[in-house]
Image: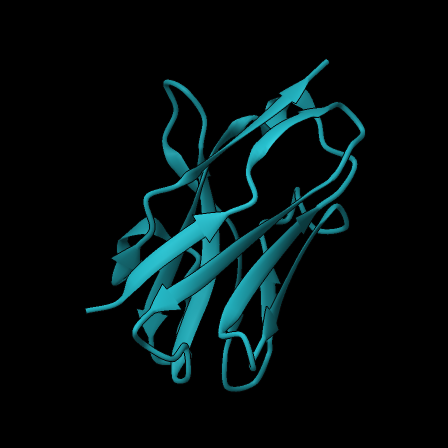
Length: 124
């Protein structure tokens, strides 16, 4: 069982930045794809970005590429989501997700594990 723990959410003004972190409790991310999804109030959970641990390849939701950057720190077994130029519409709960194997993690149904989420609120 993989337990994912997110941190780094909070309240920020439009145009600001936040960095989210996701780490696995008791398990290395080796051989996993790890990513981020978000869910705004009253809306479905949607894909943000993911990274394959073995190759470091990154994938983004098209509308977010350029403002959001996903990265990893092997030594810390942590995945980061750097979010810049934040907009009020980025307000959501952000969830870390993981899938065993370096496979596509761009859909909710493909994740094997989920974190509990961290709230990001962008004020106008």
